[in-house]
Image (cartoon, rainbow, N blue to C red):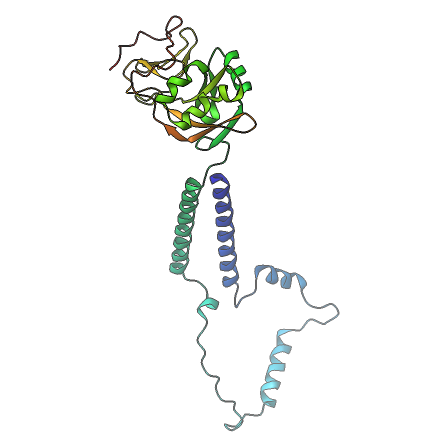
Length: 292
């Protein structure tokens, strides 16, 4: 949208400049013949069939006209016409006025561009991007995708990880998580499936690095400072101050999982381990330094 607005402003600026130049040319043409008119008059020449008039004949005709002229009396003379000052717009725009108007126009364009940028920044985002509610799909289909991707499913449009949450851990989760988080975790029980889903924010709560999955350990492992989290984002080791942050979720009537990426909930405190999952294989990064 910003690019479209800037393009429109650019077109308007070009039109304004062309109009100013056109007006300046029109003002400069007042009281004189244009170049095209003078050229056409020269090309026309004397009328066909008329004899050429010599200079002597012109002088003789002028002398006869002077002799035949009757001098006008004072009573017959017309009164002098009143003085009317010239219209400044007709005379033309001075150099100072031209530069002043140009500066004002450029300032107006700059302020307009800034205003458009501010409006675009404050404009509410669309319904399918980060910062809004995203319908990511049916819970049953998402569980199938998670399993086909070795236990981890990344959704770039929401900057989130989706992983399974076992039905057997729901009772412990009820004491550790809010209702907005539990909606996705308990989706398995609600829909008669063997697991629910947790939606985790991709950033490490330590210093904001993007946390990748480790297929061998089946944990999340931060490559920046070694923080490690189990499959549902609960901290297991490293310098992170808490578990991975997560998004509020809800389950639609048709069984679709809706993730509110505009509502980020802080991860569970250190020591939370509702699933009891241990590392299932070798770590993908160096051994973490332990809890802090």
